[in-house]
Length: 280
Image 1: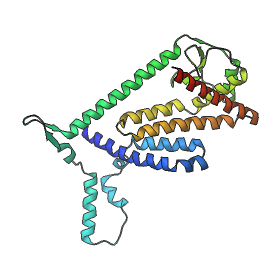
Image 2 (image 1 turned 180 degrees about the vertical axis):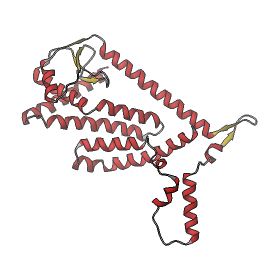
Image 3 (image 1 turned 120 degrees about the horizontal axis):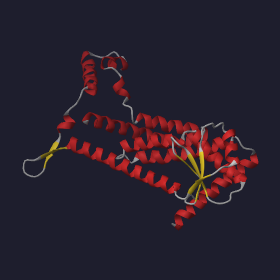
Image 4 (image 1 turned 30 degrees about the horizontal axis):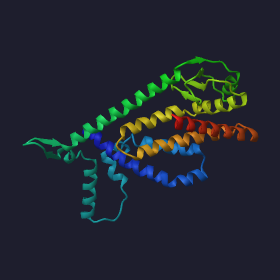
């Protein structure tokens, strides 16, 4: 288990470097590449923080990866020793301890390991409780609904899966909930067909782009690296990139007039949500 913890620390260090690099290059990506590329880059960074790729390299082949130079015998031995040290199971980290009361000592590695595991449990508990409360809140006073506009948008986006539509009094802005059994919740009240179409286009495009699955992937990575403040920056940025990617995918299917109406609709929803949060 301690070796796993050491691997997580190395992955977190690598992830921090990649996140900072991505944030520095973000203006370049925003200007020159579609939002979908940004999403893919963030996903690759998240995956790199879960998979210790260096462990996939056989130890006997490690030397083959290093470039060959005209080195002296002393230099060659130095490099070989360092390669062996890199792939060796170093126990020095596990042996560090410090004294407390009397002769009792606490092993630093085991202490950090327990703190890390405890942090994962707390992180996941908060996420699960928050998600359950969120879902129950959306289901409160909700009822199944039928909408010709909803069915029309599904056909337009070539979605054949049965996605339920529900109207709820506890919902103030439309949202897609559920990876296994997806449901689109819409606010209670009369909404113009044109506005309704824009709303459904946005939420169902999120479904097509697997936005919820991607967010859960990043939550899983954040749980593993909860101690790293940069993963929360990554979590915030992937959410922004998913929204922009969704909007860009929607406007491609709209006329010029519809594009303007769509963006105004999204901005109105954002402002309404901000006002509601402020009032609460």
